[in-house]
Amino acid sequence: MTEPGKAPRYDRIGVGYAQHRRADPRIAQQIHSALGAGASVANVGAGSGSYEPTDRTVISIEPSAVMAAQRARSAPAVRGFAHALPLHDDGVDAAMSVLSLHHWDDHTKDGVLEMRRVASGPVVIVTFDAAISGQMWLVADYMPELRELDDQIFPRPELIAEWLGSARIDVIPVARDCEDKMLGAFWAHPEWVLDPEIRQVTSGFARQSAETVARVEQAVRADLASGAWDARYGELRALQQLDVGLRLIVGN
Ligand SMILES: C[S@@+](CC[C@H](N)C(=O)[O-])C[C@H]1O[C@@H](n2cnc3c(N)ncnc32)[C@H](O)[C@@H]1O
Image 1: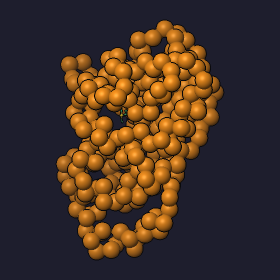
Image 2 (image 1 turned 135 degrees about the vertical axis):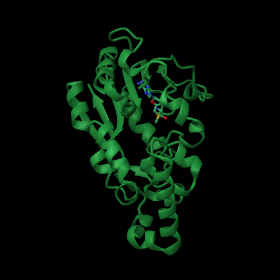
Image 3 (image 1 turned 135 degrees about the horizontal axis):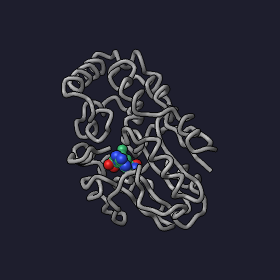
Image 4 (image 1 turned 30 degrees about the vertical axis):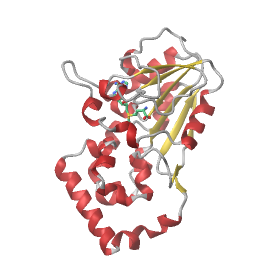
């Protein structure tokens, strides 16, 4: 969220987003099939346009000018916030939001209820279950600060489902070659921790202090060089996908 007089958070942390945070086709497929066959969809916290379907009308809502400017392959976004969607009741067939609601601060429930209000059909939300994502090696063993933050900002998927009234919760497995370099995709790529550009486009890193980021980078660098990382987590190198807590919530 953005306090009055302050720039949206993603005006600061969204620089270079579109280069590394491209839609992964397998995740897109899961989202699109959950959206159903309706002719229109609202995308809330739409960012650079990742995961937007191309076969129907999309109304994209995005507060950050830095993110909206990266919509080179998508139609322009409306500047707006989740908790006050500029749409009529049942104004669209479906609503979607991908990895955005943990930035809605005090308005998370309001935003979910707004999505329910404006969509006559499915409400599709992609989010992390912090109890699972917090078990990933990067968070559990190197960056416990992120577990603390995530526990505060990610509502439990079951709670989001409750807000929606009736909803199912599906696992979205994250593939080794996931094209969207979200923090959950780091499970297979410890070397990404050493790349400041890739780190910066994950809010998990971008919201930490410079000291924390430097400490995590040094520790991962040392453990990769010494072989300690492979000794501890080497079996991950053989996996093609993993449940790192990414969840698809579909309200009907
Ligand atoms: C991690 S990005 C995800 C962008 C896009 N959905 C994607 O999957 O690539 C989070 C987005 O949520 C937006 N956002 C932050 N606060 C918001 C709010 N209160 N209402 C709507 N969107 C918000 C940010 O500006 C940012 O574009």
